[in-house]
Length: 95
Image (cartoon, rainbow, N blue to C red):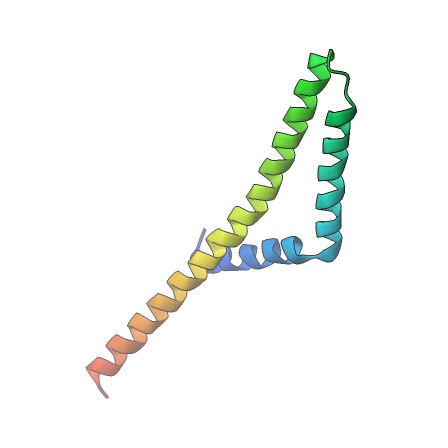
């Protein structure tokens, strides 16, 4: 994937992460998982395992969006550095 495509994907990921409805959904899901963990009977190891797996999966989803945003941000920095290099070398060559 090109750096330009990474920047575009990062923009979409950042829109999701910053979206008020998405933030509300994240908190809702986290609180529901936490509530289910607390409410699960201690003796039900299978349920506890499934709830922990749910929490891990949800964390992985959140981290994926953050990683896409971060990768695109770094790609944007790389694009800008390349642009500055070209500009500098172009000005050194003269007219």
